[in-house]
Image (cartoon, rainbow, N blue to C red; front, side, top):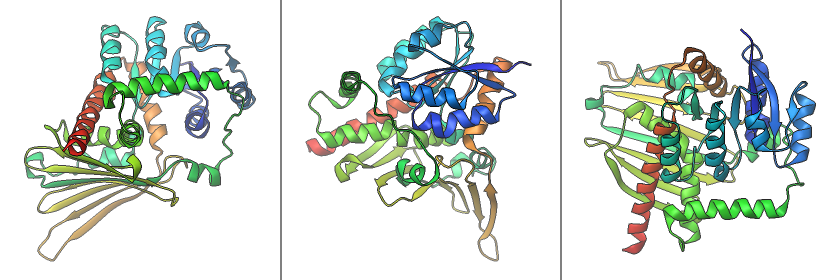
Length: 361
């Protein structure tokens, strides 16, 4: 079997620190064949690290090249919809980094455009593919026995870890007009959800939901199914911190996101019944192969009994790409597809509506 030829759109942090190294590790499955970024410095860096790859002069040229089988869309959020639309037209397999889009309207149009599509469209929610997460599914209490769920994202941003572990290039050669145009396009899309004259903290809260929080909202749904709705949502710390209560009928899933500059990563999903606790613990994804942990505690006549699957060094991004490749080869549908991502965005929109209600009252 020949390796699938991959073209990457966007060569920033996640491409440099995660996707390109994983693609090279899995060289029996993938070949880094094409690169595009709005920064020439990033293209030159990518070409120096990936012999045989071609630097393309535009995203359209890469997407439409007959020498590309799979397109990785790793670019700014506002470009996802037009790039995916073009990739569908070009009949490419696609890995689309989260968030798939910034609005449900964009996704509705893409879902309609992709009806009957015979290639694989895979949205990159890597926490769903962590080994501890997969193992936790078999350990969960029965749904009717769940009494409470806690979900934490108490972390610092990726730069705190990358600056100490990797030599990531942050380019200084991007056209300022292009950056401004992208920022305006992003603001217009976000404005469709938060409102044209929304306060800055509400805008930041929605950006956080679609970025950091999208991983755990998606992971929550993958474990528990669809919540009935959003009971409450609140933002503090200028929108950097968010709290959302998801309604599952007989129990609540409480989600907390706190972003600070302490330089720590503390991400966890905990599912409880009256006699069992299942806890999935994540470390920063920006340092590859740090362990995920699965902790299980059960009641017994002699007191709580603990079991652990620790450490699990299998990298979530590596698992994700192996799963993506298997779907391409088997022509099967991934769990994390466009419809799945739309359900995430719909919940985020409900959370924003609840935040507006609190401030309005």
